Structure formats: structure tokens, C-alpha cells
Amino acid sequence: MSKLKIAIQKNGRLSEKSLQLLKECGIKLSNGERRLKTTSSNFPIEILFLRDDDIPQYVEQGVADVGILGENEVWEKDKNVVITKKLGFANCRLSLAIPKDVQYTGLSYFNQKKVATSYPGILDKFFKQNNLEVEIETIGGSVEIAPGIGLADAIFDIVSTGSTLQINGLKEVELVTTSEAVLISNPNLDAEKQEILERLLFRIQSVRNAAENKYILLNAPNESIEKISNILPGMKSPTVLPLIEPGWSSIHSVVKEDEFWDIIDQLKALGAEGILIINVEKMIL
Ligand code: PRP
Image 1 (cartoon, rainbow, N blue to C red):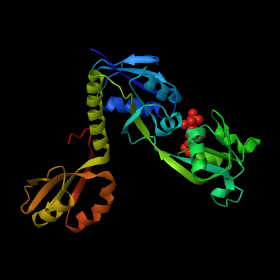
Image 2: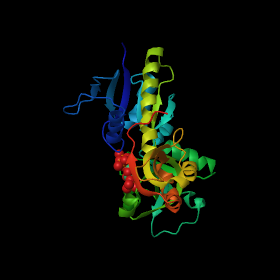
Image 3: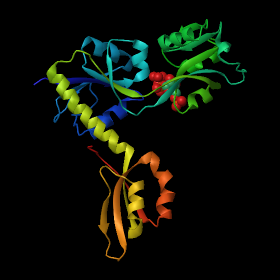
Image 4: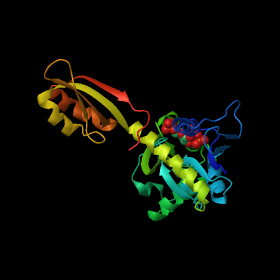
């Protein structure tokens, strides 16, 4: 039986989280010292540890069947690959930044300026769309140092917390685009590999559903059950179990993590007590 070859980043911001995702999908990898290639003992995949900027090319060529990397690298390399799934981690911005003491006058500021970046393709497209004439200086890394050493007037790079900009005396002035980790695939996978990929995507979706949802348990007076059920619709409908104390029930449901804080006050106003919020490990819809 063939194996699906998955390329992930060898070192760097996506590396640990990519491995973590596979682990959460129940995929066991033989570890030991970090090798450049490993297989799973319980799922038909092989992992290739590569530099992230090489991954689009290897997936296009079929050296790897799929890859996990930042969307920004996919856009930059512009290879014939398919973005199959957004993965919801390693979210960042791709922004233009200038020295913090320089006054920013809007996008026209960049006209006739020199901007250092590791993403010349994305930046060139952005400046062309905005009819700006800018010189792009392509460098491999440590981009934030460029204005300080007189290499460029500004930079274009990944911003996550913003601390690298701050440490280097820069300020973010234009958001060009946002990016997150994605799974890309070769557009011509054979049926067997496509089937393995479908199984993997199903597991990834279950992990993602679980990450976005919490299991909620609470006690409430029986007269509030209907109203609380409307607030907490759950996957099908909430579970309601009677408490030994007459007139009270325990209500169990699932709630979106980002909605929880918005509804907590409504639940309390309806008499809910003993509210417990529990992590969900997997969620199959
Ligand atoms: C990126 C980017 C910035 C930094 C921004 O580098 O190039 O230097 O992260 O993050 P912050 O806003 O949280 O400070 P990364 O660590 O991914 O390594 P790289 O230089 O290999 O891209």
C-alpha cells in the first residue's frame, strides 16, 4: 500500500505545531533523534522535514504529495499546488514597516523608496496594484535590520507579536495581507493517495472543530430550560438531566469558545449555577 508523503517545516515557527497537529490526529511517528524522514506506525504517511520555502516546489514536482506551511510561502513561490485546507494556526500579518521616528504619509510614502524583504513576489504585486514605483531589495532573513544598517528605507515581513519590529526601532504602517498555516497538495494525486488525504483531512477537521468548541455543563431551574436551550443549541440539542434536588436540572451542551463570554451573563441571569467549561478533544459532526 502506498504512503502519503507529507512535507513539514524542519525548523521554525510551524515545525512544532505541524507535528502537534499530526499527533492530535492520532498519528504516531517514530521519533528518536530528529531525522529528515520518518514514517507513522499507525497511518499510511511518511513525513519529510524540509525548509518551508522549498515545500511548494517539492509538492508541485510530486517529491512530496502534500505540505504544511504558511500561506505566505505558497503565494510567494506561486507553484502549481492546491491550497486544500486552512489550518488555523501560525496566524500572522505581512506588513510594511518603517523607522519609528519617520513620519508616515500614506502609501505614497513608498514611492521611489527601497524596501527590503524575503517576499519580493507578494510585495511587487502589491506595489504594482497600487501604482507605486518601489525598489525591492531581496534578502534571505533578518530583514528588520535593513533600515538600521542603511540597506533600505523600509521593510516588508511577517509580523506576529510585533516585538521584532519594536526591538529594531520600526513601526508597522501598512498591512498588506494576513496569513496562516495551510495544507497544500499536488493537483494530480492518484486515487489511493487521495483517499489517504481525505482520511487525514477528516481527522484534521475533527481536531479543528474540537479546538473551536467547549463542552459546557450547568445547573439551572427547570423553568429556564427552554430559554437556556435556545442560547445553547448544541450539536443536535442540549442534554437535560434531572438533579436530585426538585425543580432543578443539569444541562449539557457545546458552545463556541469565542461566543462563550458573550452568553455567560445571559445564562447567569436565567439562574444558571455551577457552570463548568471543559475542553473537547475530538469533535465528529
Ligand atoms: C519571523 C519574521 C520576523 C518575526 C516576527 O521570523 O521574519 O522576524 O518572525 O515575529 P514577531 O512579530 O512575533 O516578533 P521567524 O521567527 O519566523 O523566522 P524567519 O526569519 O526564518 O522567518
